[in-house]
Amino acid sequence: MSSPQREGFTAPASISHAAHGQVTNKSLGVKYNCAQCATSFSLGKSDAIRCKECGHRVIYKARTRRMVQFEAR
Image (cartoon, rainbow, N blue to C red; front, side, top):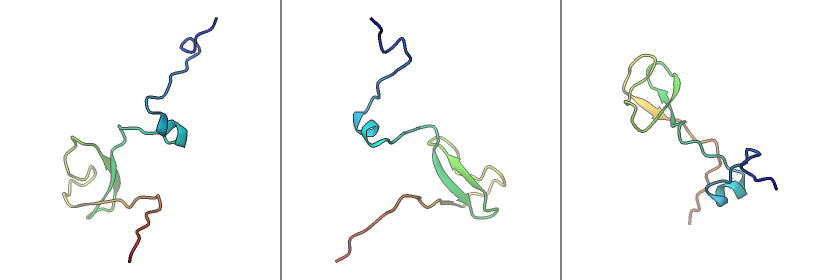
């Protein structure tokens, strides 16, 4: 008898994400762009709101790549 744990398989914690083929990685953070030097970087929850290159404090959240559709009436 072979167990699935011996082969290196780990069952996903959330079946709904696994069924849709989505991979979630919590360590990536959110992508931002600096207003002064236009550098793209990511920030986590506990990171300071400051550009990692120039130290400027005005940053813009990067636009999402997935399609967002609103229904107007």
